[in-house]
Image 1 (cartoon, helix red, strand yellow):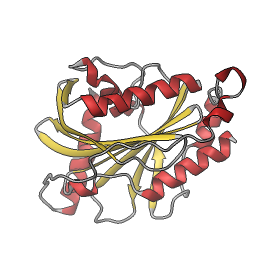
Image 2 (tube, rainbow, N blue to C red):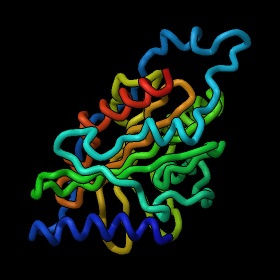
Image 3 (cartoon, helix red, strand yellow):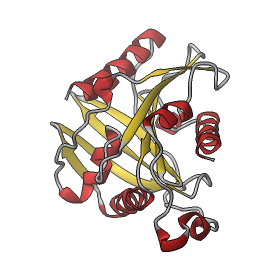
Length: 239
């Protein structure tokens, strides 16, 4: 898939620019965690329907933009990196993880807004992407539950011709109503790339964060500054 290669191309170009040799390693925690949703009952409201999906206009307003985070350049994500349809993965138990690589999901989002994030530090080898997905709250909760289960039961999978392994649940940040975090390695066109994902649910909206680093697996993580700023901006818009 073209979007897979575009991400790898960016990562490789970063390494070439730095003039370093790509290398992989291990890192991170080994246990998933979720923030207790103390306010969830109140958010669900009468009948437990939960918050309705944000509109496309609200989602675009809530997504990070140029100048929102000091030290980072933020731009719209290329359309190729956010395909509309999911593609089957093998085994099927890993499908939620395969979906999140392209910021897709089942159930599908009603609207999405993607961003690429680049450090202004010329020595940074990280490639970071994020996407906001508008759901009905019940659908958002299902996507999170499926992701959490997949991080615990999936050892590795194949997807659009590439292999992914070393899947480990990480300690999730205390953001939003709940969060899931995990890491893995991707064998993509012969390049072994450490990558990590953090997915936060705030009401009915999901925020997927993705980071990879071909030089240092310990740095294949989502910077706190990016995560904090995006969650705060979404919560301000969603009210």
